[in-house]
Amino acid sequence: MKASHIRKLITPIDSAYSEMFSGRVYRVGEGAVSVRNHSGETEQTVIGVHGFLENHCYFTQTYDAPTTELILLTCSNYHIPVNGVTPEKPAWEVPIKHLAGTIEYDACILNQALASLPSTRNVRIHGHSRGGAVIIEAARQRPELYYGTDVVLEAPALPQGRIHPLVTTLLEPVSHGMWPWLVRLINSAPSSAYGQAFFGKMNPRKKQLLGKLFYATRDHMTIVRNIENLFDWMARTDTTAYHNVPQGTFLIPGMDRILDRKSMLASARMSTNMRIVETRAPSHFVTLDSKEWVPGFESLPASSFGN
Image 1 (cartoon, rainbow, N blue to C red):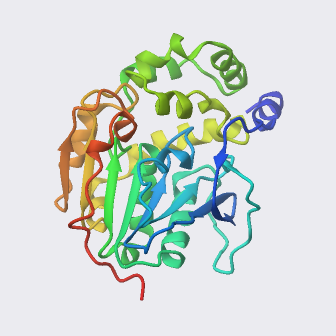
Image 2 (image 1 turned 30 degrees about the vertical axis):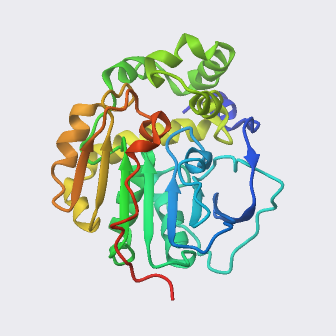
């Protein structure tokens, strides 16, 4: 890669989205883990893993019950989307040997959070899009942590999956050096110019969360690394990785113009442990389209966590 391209790619991107947050934020390597305060007696723990160019606010309104302990990942080299909280260094943090910006690195952040933070015996791990791949990789790295957990993979990037042909067509001609220019172009265009094609029918929460996508990472290099690593991970990861995910749910959109729905379904059907729910969601953002698709906690299995 040319030095001029590298300079452009590592130029910092200013944070453009955050929400008020009440809780604690732990800096873990190049990422973070946030634990939201809750007002009721805790009945279940949910760990949320956001997708490509998203942030942890993706899950905050989906899991807003006062009895839910919500733990939220910020993937490596992403901005932490909180106001008024100073990140702290946790005693349980251990160094991560993988390259920041990869699924493997973010899986290590997830496993450190899962091993250290849940205070209940009922643990769900919910990943959207790239976050689904992070969960599968994390379970492959440390399968013992996932016994008894409930996993929700929403419109997930999966082993042997593919990107939607529309996205592939757009990405193929983009060289490394073009990314900063392309991001500026996208950010200067009204979201209506591309939003309907990729995001489906909009609602207030989708507009709020998806309007600043290309400001989510701390630099353009992370965008490039996320994309290249995601393509590589899906191609080289075999569906035997599902053996490490004991139970849970695939939430498949009715229409998806980000990932290829057909390959997503074919991959999901290779899992013998998880159920597949083919939703009527009109976009890649299933739970933002409607909370009705979020599985209930009634049958959440007791895990080995907690007291």
